[in-house]
Image 1 (cartoon, rainbow over the protein chains, first blue to last red):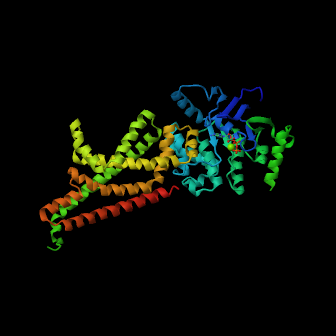
Image 2: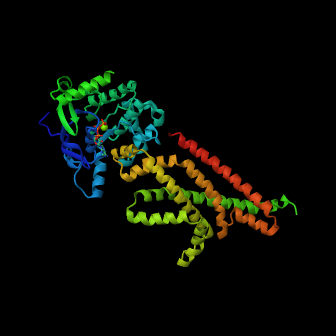
Length: 257
Length: 218
Ligand SMILES: Nc1ncnc2c1ncn2[C@@H]1O[C@H](COP(=O)(O)OP(=O)(O)OP(=O)(O)O)[C@@H](O)[C@H]1O
Ligand SMILES: [Mg+2]
């Protein structure tokens, strides 16, 4: 596995806002089908790293590669826009606050991008929407508007929307953090299912239990650097670094309260 | 000389025709002001500076000067540079652009108020900046701004009386025509007012329907 060429390859990522260094030379290789969790305290740069992958927050230094293509390559503005729009079709992203389109039905949310960008016919797009909604268990809500869905249902639709573009990799930025506790599991189940289908996933999460049960590898980030990384059983059971231990201890106390 | 409404029926065809012209000019100008308003809002927010600056001047011109003057300028003034518009067209353009500028102000604020996450979600799926604006941001911005735009459209209906001065025989001018023949200003101005009121009620009913429809998606 390790001698394989990485599927997602982040090389020496750096990001500053003015004099604030948010990412300090971070590298991360993810193999095809691998599931990587990123954990760390608030403000450590987890979202920034994730959002650098699809260039929502462009890096100030370093490279991001997907397979044989550099995502953040230097191109003239117009060409870059065309290039990045193309690349983003291959990278699904799920947000903490769902960001469903409130003016469109569930069906409309899912079919918008495939119809616009892949020029699917209405029938093809509908079939695609039904297929993806079936997968996340939301087919019976296909004609609902987002405002009438619970948080967990919204997030499952958001996942279906991302999957409808047939992405090569899925990014999750605290997909369950905004949910009421009793709604977390339904979203976790969907993510587990994706894991079983060998979707390549990078997951920013505060849920250590979920990370431990699903992920192949865990990164602990603090203040813009990767402090420690390894298999979940090592990071969660036997962390080598003092900062990792502190973070996990505090987190455990917090979640037991 | 007391009031005598018995003269009214004889001129009802003139008044009705005038009402139809008022409806036509209102619909045409309202449509122009709506789509023009969206276009102006996008220009004001996103166009490059060399486009935006002259545009700001143009917007100021329409907001800072009387509509009456603008109508005169479009109808009588443009002839001098070879643009000879029919009165109806000049009226629609004047009213439409004037209210487009007001609508644009509303839509701009509303576009900026759409959650940034909406654009991010759209761009993440691969939509271009323009596609995200057209398919995700603007529909939401417009939906949020239906009630105040509706108020502008009712103001537009009332201001449509101004195009009588460039000779469009809409409701007000038709009433004046009847008055010229009968010397019964009170009667015919009241009749015209009643017609404005009826058109106004119909518009408000239509707006409420649109509002209800757009509320469904909240
Ligand atoms: N647009 C911005 N301008 C300036 N600073 C920013 C901006 N976005 C993020 N930051 C800063 O970058 C740092 C990392 O932010 P980031 O959102 O990546 O953290 P995070 O690890 O995702 O935190 P959380 O767990 O709270 O989501 C923070 O200190 C944040 O204040
Ligand atoms: Mg974050």
